Length: 438
Image (cartoon, rainbow, N blue to C red; front, side, top):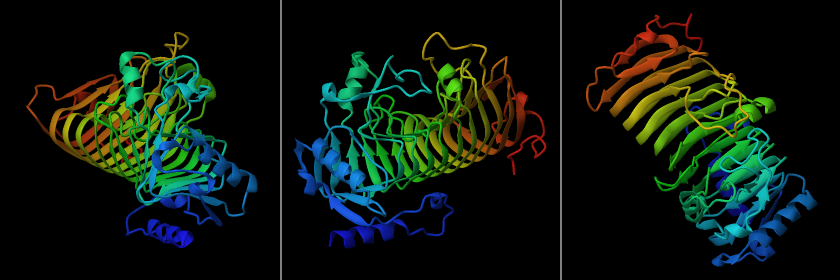
């Protein structure tokens, strides 16, 4: 009966209603075997700690290594747990009404090494807390279900951050490292202590039909942060958090430069959401390079920045070949911000002469209502931003300003942009200048 129910949900997940999609880069798989967390002593009463049950179930999947893999079924209930690791060739399936809930016992949370492309924890020197659900060096991992929930109970961590009592960097809700063939779909992520979904050094990743929620004042609760990863498809997601909804990253200053793994081939499509920060961001950790990013069909409301491309001196690396199209914004502080003075540094060892190259950014077919400032484009004197191309953009501003666009150290073009853009973008728009304009 359980296998038939899971099969039915899988078939529904694979139904696509005539919309363009990149999700086919990783096909959904049926597993040869299904086991339940209940079989390993799991108790979904919201009080019993189930860390051992998850560890034993996943140990079984790893060591029996069934051909075709195994599905771990989490039925309805509240499954309190500490952090645990996934394994290859497995599906974590959350049934309707299932909640995997993180323990709030921060003192027992495991520590892991900092990422080599960051050199230290993102918030504090030294190591960092392991994500609630974690995996390293895996292949073929699926996290899906019938819209079950993964709840980080992040308020205890947010309060430590506010009170400046964090001993180490906060844990993500989900982090997969050095992993390929990933699907994350039809699950609700809520109240993450830090970033929600963080694929880092990964390839062939699909994140679709996911809901991500956190209070508007929750610190650094980014939605989806692909980091030094390639072939990533982010589609049909709703995100409302306290920080960037989606932020593409690739390492931090001298550590990211040395590690040298870019993010490339990223598609962000049909994203809806709200944030006090960015709807879609690139950076500010860009030291390994970021290229070939497509952002389209985005709907934002009550958001700080619609599109935010951000880097800094000391980052090095590059941001190039970014295309943003078909974006609707309502109640936004800054419609488009492209800036070279954003973000902190891991330590004093960064090289201020390591300036990023920003080239080939096309933004077109954008409409915004109730926008305070249409655009801010601030390049670097030692590395001006080039080929910044704007087309068919209309912002209805809150109040008319004498200088609606603020620009410096930038070249590019603009066509059919209201209010009229800065003079730095005066070159005629066209394919000779804008390589990704068509």
